[in-house]
Length: 121
Length: 292
View 1: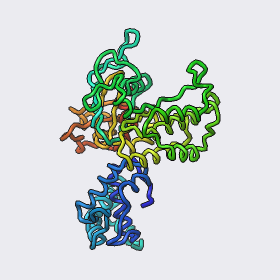
View 2: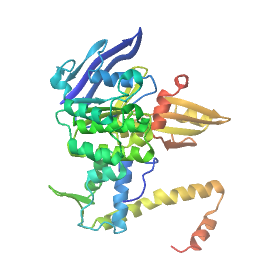
View 3: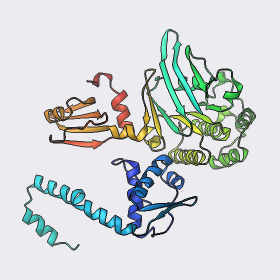
View 4: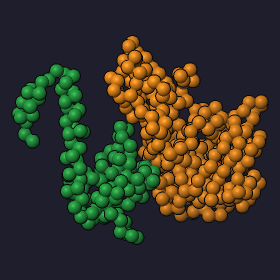
């Protein structure tokens, strides 16, 4: 929750991704309350409507849920859900740009695989 | 509740400073009013607050005209940029007295908040306004705006002269007050980037006319920067609203404003990058001859 905002992406997306990352890192635990939109607004100095939009996205995906009159909570199984989602997006978000850069540098597939093989995951 | 102005025209010595401005200010939003120097921002705010008569057009609050209407005016606070020079007559007034006058004017004045802010800003209220620095004068206008508790509060360049820490404090205080009260704020500022994330809606005033009045995020998302080899860029943005072209040798960069459903042709060899509110504003208002 204490990452900085950047200009490269819509703020509400960054808010939802930061909450997700905190759930992945177990900074926020399942069935635990997440900061309110007003708290998020003040922390990041952003409009509460923007914070609400980011939180709303996670509610739509079933990662957070609302307890009436209390606030937002991390849903059971949220961590698994985020893991699955991020894995599904990994090829597109990380492998594709890696291949594009390799192509423009003339790095062959074999060279690339060797480079990956030399590293520890 | 809503504050509405219709076809506001303001003419100063034969020149139209505002040209048929129509706006619907909805309750419970933070609006940003941005525009270049001389765009008419202060004039517009002073007319909305009935501190300055329009040459024609009307301002209404819940259907009632606000001009000389005490009931409506109690709900509106325009905390002007203080200019404590000798002519204004304010120079000899102590900050304390200025705040006391504001407190008598606004029924809902929040005295505890006033005390808290004076302490937070470390403002010496025994000093005369004429002896305060620009930043300290801004603090006084911020205190008036926040403590007035007016349903509609306008701040004109509230962060002028404030250092970066005080500016951040101001935005946090504004959000705190906004979250707890649901008041409506219109804030004019030249320091666009810092304010961008706080503003739910943005109003762009250019040469007396409203160019844009929309959700800030939607406006920022509609703008992209496209760059690459000039021919590729031209092909990628053909048929789109293009602003602010810049070329260096064979390379070209443009800012494009996309209408719903429009897209940059990414099959061309170009880079497409998001732009900030400030860049979008500069592209729109910064270079008349750049329009195509």
